[in-house]
Image 1 (cartoon, rainbow, N blue to C red):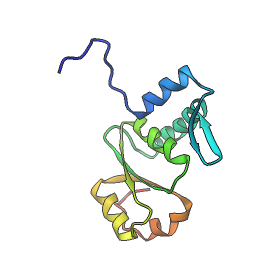
Image 2 (spheres, rainbow, N blue to C red; image 1 turned 180 degrees about the vertical axis):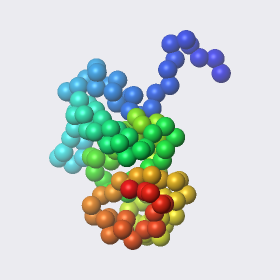
Image 3 (cartoon, helix red, strand yellow; image 1 turned 60 degrees about the horizontal axis):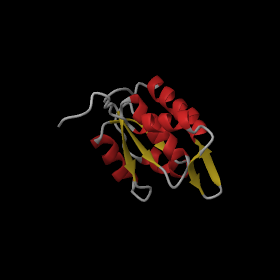
Image 4 (cartoon, rainbow, N blue to C red; image 1 turned 30 degrees about the horizontal axis):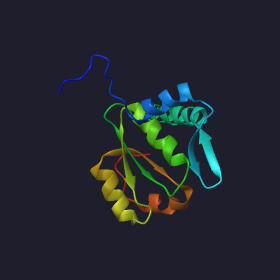
Length: 131
């Protein structure tokens, strides 16, 4: 494949950062009555990135997320992309056994979860060392 010399691959985090530089006050995400601007999304995304790195997630690392429809979903997915890691999205309707199987299969080092799913997370057989 031939690419122009100016080509730079971008992940979700880079795309959000680019938009934030151009339109920091513009709405990036809306869910119901709540919304986040690109500037706020980048701030929150950076917190996820730094927190995930502090927990040992980096290039090639994996995480999982189990959440309903929440604004936090976007900051978590973008923040994890910025670490160079990948994220597996787990359906909130899955059982703890299914969650554990997915987390083990993708070798998740971190699982992010909506507080409503705390019991499922605690009951899941997560990979050793997963937080």
